[in-house]
Amino acid sequence: MTENLCPRCFAPLSPRGVCPECGRRASRPPRPDPRALPEGTLLKNRYVLGGTIGEGGFGVTYFAFDTMRSARVAVKEYFPFTVAARVGKAVEARSPELRGRFSLGKKRFTDEAKNMAAIKDLKDIPTALDYFSENGTAYIVMEYIEGETLKDRVFKKGKMKEGDALALLRPVFSSLALIHDAGLLHRDVSADNIILGKGCAKLIDFGSSVSAGRQQSLELKRRYAPPEQYEKDGSVDRRADVYAAGATLYYCVTGCLPPEATDRLRQDRISFPARLSPHMRAALTKALSLKKEDRYADMREMLADLDGIN
Image (cartoon, rainbow, N blue to C red):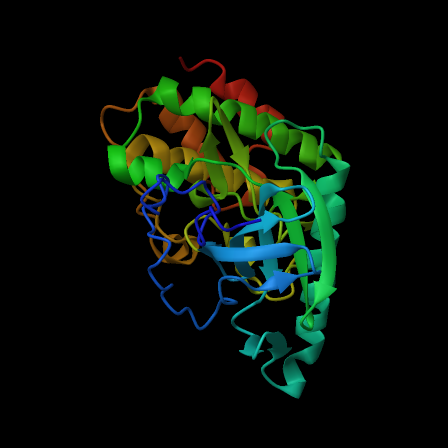
């Protein structure tokens, strides 16, 4: 069923056996990746894995092909590199002392599928299609979204005009507000977790999502995370996502990320290009406030302020 498809991304191959999307030649052997499962691995007797779409602190996301639906999907594997290691195909805690943390993270990971299912009607959030346990870990099957990440777009084309950045991000921020209404936090909003598809942008990767007020784990995305997210036993609320949304917008309009929050606590050196409008500077300053009580209370308040920028 996958004979005429690219072994990495499952796009149809050209007559010469070359993938028009990723450039892979079918006869070329894959590059070994010690963190990822090999191309061709079959999960749940249904999902054939290809190459990796991305790897992060919480796991690996693969291109995959659903043999029952004859469709491309994305499969995300729970594999927190800091606490787990791969043994054959299995994922195991690195030590007995880390088993509790690994198990708790695995439960939260499977909760992601439930979280995504609860908000599946949002067009700016990918649909969760299936989830299951195998190889000692957990997997989530998601709608495959064709496109590049916002991070790649800015890296290739440079910083964006304020209006262009807001036109792209407003729908994503609005969906984030609805996620908060459901009592959930994303906790990993970033430019590399926003996929630019055909005429839309989608917020992906709910692997670190939790219910509001729950204690958070040590994994975080530096330069997107506010100070309170670094606290080992602290709790976060929707203002942590506000900070990350501000960092994402800052990246779009400046072409770089703000300094890491812990560095800013020692000396706050956040700066803005002279070309930015005063309104945008004020909005970013408030969204990126180190004290959460100085930030926007929620995404709707932030969006209302951004509505005055064209």
